[in-house]
Image (spheres, rainbow over the protein chains, first blue to last red):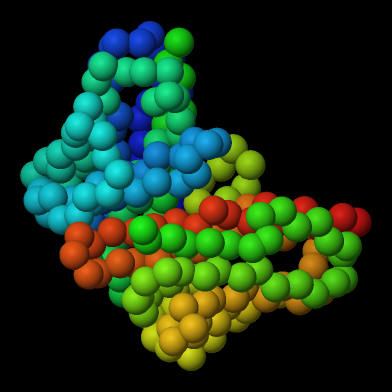
Length: 115
Length: 112
């Protein structure tokens, strides 16, 4: 158990809908990262937050947004969902702003299925 | 375009054999990570390599980093079935937008 929690574990929804994925980092970690893993795209870095502020952006679509709250939990919002958004979404956390001297600890993931 | 390439993509090997997985990246970075993922599971951090020439070992796995060649290797010694998993390398890019880029992954199957 990495100490990173994600809810829900599974999510099934329809095209055009909006969903929110939630992540709680390890105790004491200030950085949260979001990743998308699909069969055709592999593991894609989406976005990083540090202590409530956005720090880095990867291949995140405009339909997707994220935020980190004062209690350091983070939410990833996916809107106008398309079939291709079906994937496993991981959250990871680490202690430092860069994350480069600390390991990232991954949560169990949320499996999103868009029908 | 920034790329992190692993080879091989698939590896089937006999127990007791040695093999190396390669991770090549196309831009300057001095920080590289190796992760393991079991089917349907999350990613587990294996190694953090923070400088040129860094070598780390844990059990039957050893990872190294050559930043000049933009190459990292994950060497498997005397493979056992429990090592069957998908292995990812990831590179941190710090020029321009700070981001992590994961390799394509190497799916390893160790046959008894």
